[in-house]
Image 1: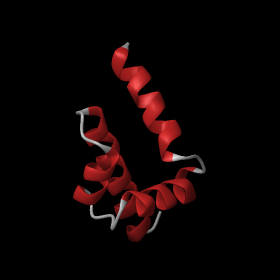
Image 2 (image 1 turned 60 degrees about the horizontal axis):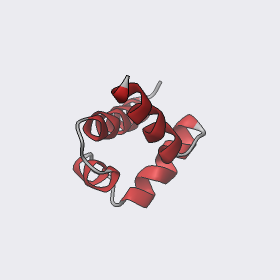
Image 3 (image 1 turned 120 degrees about the vertical axis):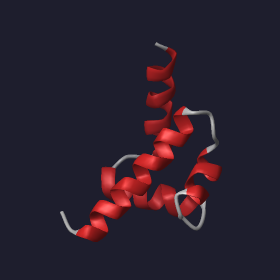
Image 4 (image 1 turned 180 degrees about the vertical axis):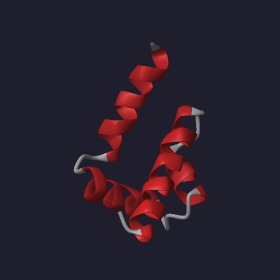
Length: 65
């Protein structure tokens, strides 16, 4: 993994951690340094191959249990 890929991965994980703590995707994405929630969604899809909403839905399910 390149350093740039590592940084992107860490920024994505930061967004998910913030969403678990109750922040919106937009606020978490901006806090992680993405230019918008759409930019975050695009990068997330390129890295993980699935939409951000799918992952956040799963995170909410895990949070409830």
